[in-house]
Amino acid sequence: MATLGLIEYKDASPEVRAVYDDIMATRKTDWINNFWKAIAHDPITLRRTWEDIKQIMAPGALDALTKEMVYLAVSVSNQCGYCIASHTAGARKQGMTDEMFKELMAVVGMANQTNRLVSGYQVEIDDKFRTSK
Image (cartoon, rainbow, N blue to C red; front, side, top):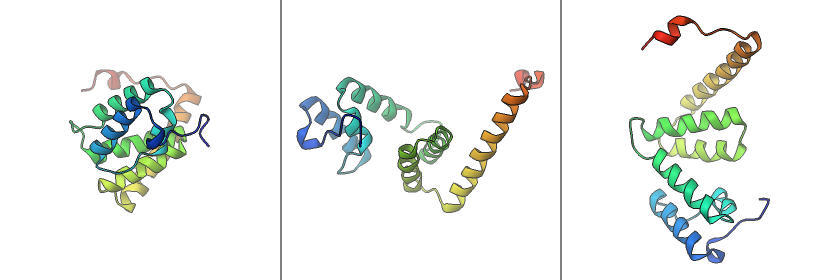
């Protein structure tokens, strides 16, 4: 259970309901997930986090699937079970196949392994990496 519980739509203040309404309209859904309900105890954090996510995940140089897969990869590395579930669903909605998921997990696993080896061996960065474009 969330530390402070969840704020359901029917119990939300007008300020929180306005954010919930924007989330549902933007995502074209009829429900609010538990992440938003948990952070709604702090309406300022709720609004700021939603506005930031809405901006970052909006169309840009990266397509929606790529953004969801990057978010999923970081969530796996940070071991956030909730975010893994949320962004796996988001990536699947954007077209991620089982094959893409498996390959992404292989890349994430390899990156984490080599990152730890580089850190452990304290490998210096090659000068060519610093000057390449």
